[in-house]
Length: 262
Ligand SMILES: *Cc1c(COP(=O)(O)O)cnc(C)c1O
Image (cartoon, rainbow, N blue to C red; front, side, top):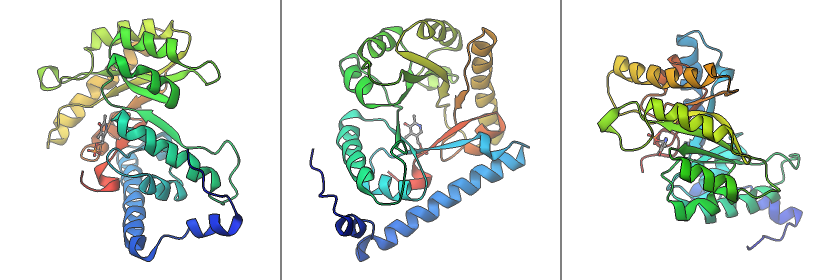
């Protein structure tokens, strides 16, 4: 992996965007601020504390420079859906973030979530490179991830992906399957169950959005009622984050409203 020479003056100059990209950087930071404002307003509208809701920046199809721009603006949690694209991007971000001079502590690192479909021949690099996997929908995949999680890393933080839209969605397991899968994941040594994730079928109607998120929340509550200590309700994207927040989302996954259209 190519590391830039970490000389102070060189590192400092890498902090300055080139004139050509300054507008792009500013637009990105403006969109980041407006998404954070939407989260705060959404929380206020339903009487929740905005501190209980975190933003996961979905950087799929966008480059390392966009990630680093948001990181410089305080964003730490990023998500990717396509492994091939994610691995080199994550390596670049890791190297560049390590040399950016802003007086950070050594444990101030970027956190990466895998949120895409997982084929069984791709589990090893996912287990080796990601902090979280939110798209767990099969026991076989979960077992492989647990077996392949390197011993020197923290357990993989995971969410079960739930399908509350029936035929309208191909990803995620049914609510009943999700509860069973949660039990078996909790018994896997290198996995730490954190909650559930869902991508409901899109709808323009706020009431329909809310009803679907309420169904996701019900699965979360069922798993918690079994005594599992979970804290993450990952739901809400660019088009429907307000409805998700009303139904208790703790993590909203936002791509296009932050980075632009894909
Ligand atoms: C792409 C993606 C998102 C972000 O969607 P936007 O509509 O761009 O905000 C969120 N979650 C998952 C699982 C995704 O694949």
